[in-house]
Image (tube, rainbow, N blue to C red; front, top):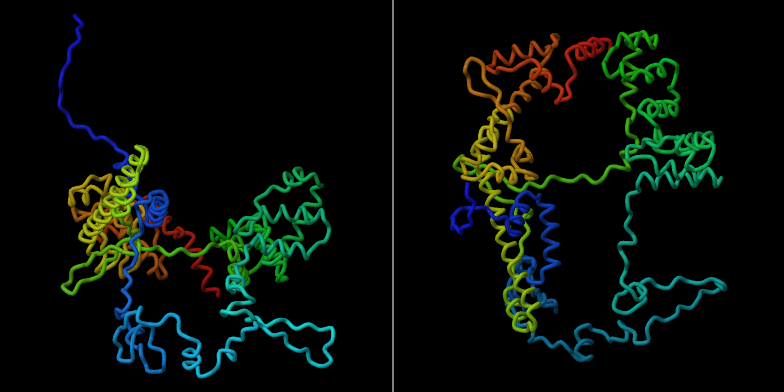
Length: 520
């Protein structure tokens, strides 16, 4: 076999992942919050980018209802409008009127309105020696507050966190420096739910104090508000609240010690354990439900974030659906070409020219990527609405099986592109706001050759059947037979999986719960 070297020319196609293409792919899968953060960073870095501002009417143009009401003949022309409502040029006004003209308009002398000598000290009333009067709050000229702009933010109140709430109580509960030190560490170890996750032995070793001191300080912290804070598990949290209500008797103590039986709804076992009848057990369970299992959530919970839809869907007059982008979720940026032309003429070095050229290229690519992202989201959302029109008309029960490939083939895109578009995006409908991924559900075959059913629709039907239970509690096998009668071919383990995802207990636990209800 001979070896030789030679030159060959071949023609082929290859996908080159340029930085600009990577940027476009990255922007496609970002949520509107992450996209806004990314655009803000680009606006700060690139001098040629600027945010598209809302157009403001030119001076002299009508500005709505407030502009139409100008010129009421009371001496004030509405700021640029004469008595007939016609616009006047701003430059026609005398910006430096004389003192006599001002006094004539005001009907009084300026000395009576704006004293030239500044604030005058008030005379103290008779018999007030040794007392001082607080100066008038608006004592400066120009409407200032003590000569400075009033700080209205200083009058606002902020919500107290759980750590601050407990620390304030610790300062009042003990004056011992050691207890305050240990208490501070215990407060820091309490999570947002109000539970102590730190091991007391490890904490005592780290602080170099006796474990008995840590236990004593923990008892002090567990007496703070809210009730149940500082507990190490759920049973201790409920016990603390019951002790404060003077309801931690032996029967309740036995009930709290076996919360696993409460979760399983083993009422017969609980009656034997607590030594009470059905009526007393029902009262105890009702009292247990009124307790707060997470006492710190009133402080530790963050602000509720509203899911802002990227696309709105609303019915059209002809019975179809209108799909439109949410303009509030789309950042609008512009490329300042005039600024680039001005600065590029003054660029002296090759480094400056290369920097400006790179900024212009990046800015143009960013604007095109944002436009392409918006068009792609709108195209995918329109196809989802077309495929799932039954959901928008009749609800969850009419969801159809749908996958990424079906949408990708319909709009002529790749599945990976559709996957990126539907990630972290949501659709606002008359039935609520749903993530785009919600409309992609697996298919469950139909019985006797019937059409396939959506897994989400089947899950919804299982919940409806269980909610409609009367005296007869449906087991998973019974649910399978009901669904097969409705044309859904489903296995029992699938029914159990869907039931557990809905947080619905088993038929045995539901039967036990129903058995205890007539005793009420």
